[in-house]
Length: 234
Image (tube, rainbow, N blue to C red):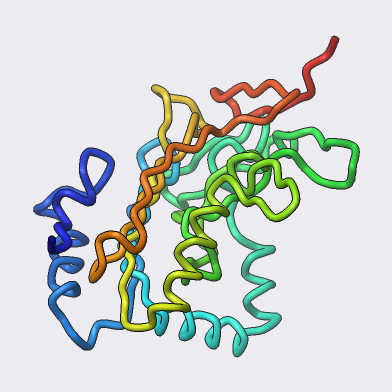
């Protein structure tokens, strides 16, 4: 059973007449292809949309080498990046600059344990070749990102990332199609959940993941319209 890009992208994916779909189709038939990520532009409300990637071991290694060469410059770019939808209380989106104003501050309270319940979540992880620009970042909870980690069990988007990375380490000739789409309700600034899909191309049974991950946090209430998160008070 050969890999079918049309079936893979589905209703949360790419239009068949889009440039991304056409480029990805051509890449799948290119024996020299070494991997690439395609990012859709922010929507008219300044919200991050889908990321689609064809990931290979060479793509991951190349990205890691480039990040190492950039060093401090890479970290400086991350610290100076633009805000994302839902990250700032009272922030407004400027479509001409594709940036959110700082508003009155961050949208989440701390757990009181030295960590935040929400932060900037990569749709395509850095270790899988993802970049640090806004088209790859959403405002999400710790549960969405890594789940509630107990012992050696991984959850959230992190579970998919580890599964894909380990598979490619053990299958260097393989490609993995990877699609991540935040799901918003109406005009809300913060995604309600994220749809993650990953499938190996050469071996259809190697990796085959369809995963809806809720953007929630136990013991906290979330205003998805603004992105504000606070503890549930008794």
